[in-house]
Image (cartoon, rainbow, N blue to C red; front, side):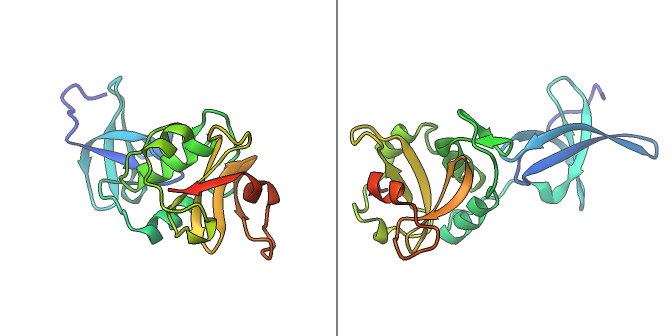
Length: 196
């Protein structure tokens, strides 16, 4: 620790998992692993590395390209960020790259793109602007909402357009609501409510 180190900036981890290193002379060891979406207090930044400080005063280093201050909000970039999490396991209540539930996944993707949305799928649905009740109208980045009981929203996913959806069920996976597509899942089509 360094007593006079003060945060100069805050950055968000955008890598799936950033490794923060401690350094002693020529030796380095892992201090902590921080998942995508985690915030770090930055003491200084160099061309290739960022010097960060933890709340307990420990200092560490990470690669500059693993945490950013700028955000992207266009549909194509949101879709690219969403694809980074393919294969991440489902974890109820999860909202990190270690495990994601459906609404945690959607929230994290938006967070990484600089957009704040609620945590729960019901709240995401209630806050969203209704676009269509036909899934074929969804464009990349739109949210698709589902109800297994026909009453309350119980699932959310992100459209890639053309009937494709990225969502966390079992793991973050790619499915389709279109019968002619090889990744078609009838349960998704049958429980679909609307695009927001």
